Image (cartoon, rainbow, N blue to C red):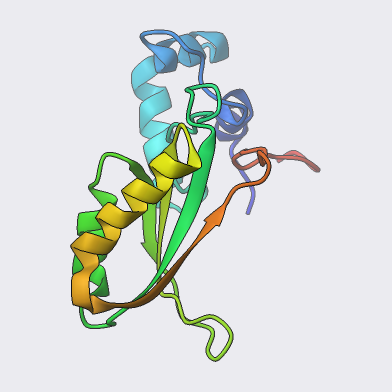
Length: 162
Protein backbone atom coordinates (compact mmCIF):
# COMPACT_ATOMS: atom_id res chain seq x y z
CA UNK A 1 0.00 0.00 0.00
CA UNK A 2 1.22 3.47 -0.86
CA UNK A 3 0.64 6.11 1.79
CA UNK A 4 -0.22 9.71 1.07
CA UNK A 5 2.77 11.87 2.18
CA UNK A 6 0.62 13.59 4.85
CA UNK A 7 -0.58 10.25 6.22
CA UNK A 8 2.98 8.95 6.29
CA UNK A 9 4.08 12.07 8.19
CA UNK A 10 1.22 11.58 10.67
CA UNK A 11 2.22 7.97 11.30
CA UNK A 12 5.88 8.91 11.68
CA UNK A 13 4.97 11.72 14.10
CA UNK A 14 2.83 9.46 16.29
CA UNK A 15 4.45 6.02 16.05
CA UNK A 16 6.69 6.54 19.08
CA UNK A 17 3.82 7.87 21.18
CA UNK A 18 1.85 11.02 21.72
CA UNK A 19 3.19 13.94 23.76
CA UNK A 20 2.10 13.88 27.41
CA UNK A 21 0.21 17.15 27.33
CA UNK A 22 -3.48 18.02 27.82
CA UNK A 23 -4.10 18.24 24.04
CA UNK A 24 -1.64 15.87 22.36
CA UNK A 25 -3.36 15.85 18.95
CA UNK A 26 -3.25 19.63 18.77
CA UNK A 27 0.51 19.54 19.43
CA UNK A 28 1.08 16.88 16.75
CA UNK A 29 -1.09 18.77 14.26
CA UNK A 30 0.83 21.99 14.89
CA UNK A 31 4.13 20.17 14.43
CA UNK A 32 2.90 18.88 11.06
CA UNK A 33 1.47 22.22 9.99
CA UNK A 34 -2.13 20.97 9.71
CA UNK A 35 -5.27 21.53 11.73
CA UNK A 36 -6.22 19.25 14.61
CA UNK A 37 -9.53 18.38 12.90
CA UNK A 38 -7.67 17.24 9.76
CA UNK A 39 -5.27 15.17 11.85
CA UNK A 40 -8.11 13.43 13.67
CA UNK A 41 -10.02 12.86 10.41
CA UNK A 42 -6.95 11.33 8.75
CA UNK A 43 -6.27 9.10 11.77
CA UNK A 44 -9.88 7.93 11.68
CA UNK A 45 -9.61 7.16 7.95
CA UNK A 46 -6.34 5.26 8.48
CA UNK A 47 -8.06 3.25 11.19
CA UNK A 48 -11.09 2.51 8.99
CA UNK A 49 -8.75 1.38 6.19
CA UNK A 50 -6.91 -0.94 8.56
CA UNK A 51 -3.62 0.91 8.18
CA UNK A 52 -3.60 1.48 11.95
CA UNK A 53 -5.49 -0.73 14.37
CA UNK A 54 -5.88 1.50 17.37
CA UNK A 55 -4.51 4.41 19.35
CA UNK A 56 -4.22 3.62 23.01
CA UNK A 57 -2.16 3.95 26.14
CA UNK A 58 0.55 1.43 26.93
CA UNK A 59 1.39 2.14 30.57
CA UNK A 60 4.58 0.91 32.16
CA UNK A 61 3.08 -1.05 35.06
CA UNK A 62 6.43 -1.35 36.80
CA UNK A 63 6.74 2.45 37.03
CA UNK A 64 3.20 2.53 38.46
CA UNK A 65 4.27 0.16 41.27
CA UNK A 66 2.68 -2.94 39.75
CA UNK A 67 5.78 -5.13 39.76
CA UNK A 68 3.99 -8.49 39.76
CA UNK A 69 2.20 -9.35 36.55
CA UNK A 70 0.49 -12.59 35.72
CA UNK A 71 -1.25 -13.80 32.61
CA UNK A 72 -4.04 -15.94 33.96
CA UNK A 73 -5.21 -18.62 31.54
CA UNK A 74 -8.52 -20.43 31.79
CA UNK A 75 -10.25 -23.44 30.27
CA UNK A 76 -13.79 -22.06 30.04
CA UNK A 77 -16.92 -23.63 28.56
CA UNK A 78 -17.00 -22.43 24.94
CA UNK A 79 -20.69 -21.53 25.15
CA UNK A 80 -20.03 -19.15 28.06
CA UNK A 81 -16.55 -17.79 27.32
CA UNK A 82 -17.61 -14.60 25.50
CA UNK A 83 -19.99 -13.43 28.23
CA UNK A 84 -17.62 -14.38 31.03
CA UNK A 85 -14.69 -12.79 29.21
CA UNK A 86 -16.61 -9.50 29.03
CA UNK A 87 -17.21 -9.65 32.78
CA UNK A 88 -13.57 -10.43 33.56
CA UNK A 89 -12.33 -7.73 31.19
CA UNK A 90 -14.44 -5.19 33.11
CA UNK A 91 -12.66 -5.94 36.41
CA UNK A 92 -10.52 -2.97 37.46
CA UNK A 93 -7.37 -5.06 37.95
CA UNK A 94 -7.52 -6.80 34.52
CA UNK A 95 -5.77 -4.76 31.84
CA UNK A 96 -6.66 -6.98 28.94
CA UNK A 97 -8.77 -10.07 28.49
CA UNK A 98 -9.28 -12.04 25.32
CA UNK A 99 -10.37 -15.35 23.86
CA UNK A 100 -7.91 -17.53 21.94
CA UNK A 101 -8.36 -20.86 20.20
CA UNK A 102 -7.24 -23.92 22.11
CA UNK A 103 -4.23 -25.87 20.83
CA UNK A 104 -5.24 -29.35 21.95
CA UNK A 105 -3.82 -31.57 23.26
CA UNK A 106 -0.96 -29.30 24.37
CA UNK A 107 -2.82 -26.11 25.37
CA UNK A 108 -6.36 -26.38 26.67
CA UNK A 109 -6.87 -22.73 27.66
CA UNK A 110 -9.20 -20.45 25.69
CA UNK A 111 -9.49 -17.36 27.90
CA UNK A 112 -6.60 -15.08 28.90
CA UNK A 113 -6.65 -12.23 31.42
CA UNK A 114 -3.64 -10.11 32.41
CA UNK A 115 -3.62 -9.28 36.12
CA UNK A 116 -1.31 -6.74 37.77
CA UNK A 117 -0.38 -6.21 41.39
CA UNK A 118 2.32 -4.98 43.71
CA UNK A 119 3.22 -8.57 44.72
CA UNK A 120 2.65 -12.14 43.57
CA UNK A 121 0.35 -12.63 46.53
CA UNK A 122 -1.81 -9.71 45.39
CA UNK A 123 -1.94 -11.08 41.84
CA UNK A 124 -2.90 -14.54 43.14
CA UNK A 125 -5.68 -13.02 45.27
CA UNK A 126 -7.01 -11.19 42.21
CA UNK A 127 -6.75 -14.41 40.21
CA UNK A 128 -8.92 -16.06 42.87
CA UNK A 129 -11.56 -13.36 42.30
CA UNK A 130 -11.57 -14.24 38.60
CA UNK A 131 -11.91 -17.94 39.49
CA UNK A 132 -14.90 -17.12 41.70
CA UNK A 133 -16.54 -15.23 38.86
CA UNK A 134 -15.97 -18.14 36.43
CA UNK A 135 -17.30 -20.72 38.87
CA UNK A 136 -18.24 -24.08 37.37
CA UNK A 137 -17.77 -22.80 33.81
CA UNK A 138 -14.01 -23.16 34.35
CA UNK A 139 -12.44 -26.61 34.15
CA UNK A 140 -8.77 -25.65 34.64
CA UNK A 141 -6.49 -22.65 34.97
CA UNK A 142 -2.92 -21.54 35.40
CA UNK A 143 -1.03 -18.29 35.79
CA UNK A 144 2.13 -17.30 33.98
CA UNK A 145 4.14 -14.64 35.82
CA UNK A 146 6.22 -12.10 33.92
CA UNK A 147 9.94 -12.52 34.41
CA UNK A 148 11.08 -9.49 32.42
CA UNK A 149 9.76 -6.33 30.83
CA UNK A 150 9.13 -6.57 27.12
CA UNK A 151 9.36 -3.38 25.11
CA UNK A 152 5.93 -2.34 23.90
CA UNK A 153 5.89 -0.60 20.56
CA UNK A 154 3.31 0.03 17.91
CA UNK A 155 3.69 0.07 14.16
CA UNK A 156 6.92 1.49 12.82
CA UNK A 157 7.39 2.71 9.25
CA UNK A 158 10.65 2.07 7.50
CA UNK A 159 11.89 1.55 4.01
CA UNK A 160 10.79 3.26 0.83
CA UNK A 161 8.67 6.37 1.22
CA UNK A 162 5.66 6.91 -0.92
